[in-house]
Amino acid sequence: MANSPRNIRSQRLFLRAPLAGGAQVPLDRAQTNYLVNVLRVRAGAEVRVFNGRDGEWQATLLEESRRSFRLDMVKLIRSQPPPADLHYLFVPIRQARLDYMVEKAVEMGVTRLRPVLSQHGQVSRLNTDRMEAHAIEAAEQCGVLAIPEVDAARPLAAVIDDWSKEDAGRRIVFCDEQHGGSDPLAVLAGVQPAPLALLVGPEGGFSDEERRVLREQSFVTALPLGPRILRADTAGVAALALIQAVLGDWRGSVRNVGEPVEKEDMIS
Image 1: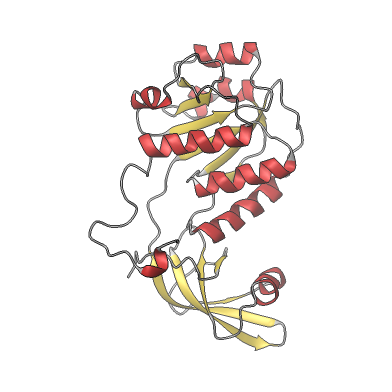
Image 2: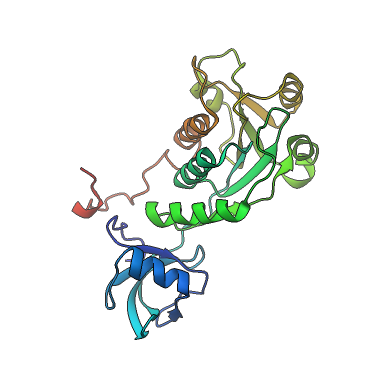
């Protein structure tokens, strides 16, 4: 019961309120508009809700008065899983591609979004509220139960200088288009599974000085991504897939051993 498979057809909503059996959560104007007007959910319908702390709950949408709705918690569907620990450091790119990057990072299990500013970066101002909104939307759509933290942008040099104090024990895997190697799986096979951070540079790549500094750090591992030059958002997805497959939660099945596959969980 507490870890039942997600229903990919159910409407899901992120709430900030505590969730527990019998709890009643009033919806604000934006949440009401999203459920009732955008998703066309009607009073009495089932909605799945989560807050990143208390698991996923089945709730019922109830109309209190015209334009006023609430969600009544019915039962726990999935317990909150243990928190993952994968940070994503990236140089901000232009907005449309950045939205895509954030969404895919959430789908790939990133738990903290950490924008950094580099010498060749083309974007210096970042809307972290927009990033958080896209992270929430991605979590609602893909069944994730946790929303990643979103940091303010910091210069890459400052992040590296402070790493041993703020992130001691966490290894950075950085996408190095000048690595010279051709086997990212072999590189990752020599890295301890956790904790990890992935670092992806800007469209123009890291400067020679930034690359030199990164390679000199004992807590940094350079990662090749094959013979082609990838866009920053593509490189991020590719590297996250490799990390999750070799070191992360793709190594075993998310489904409990012996748990039957339900028809609603299958995508044709």
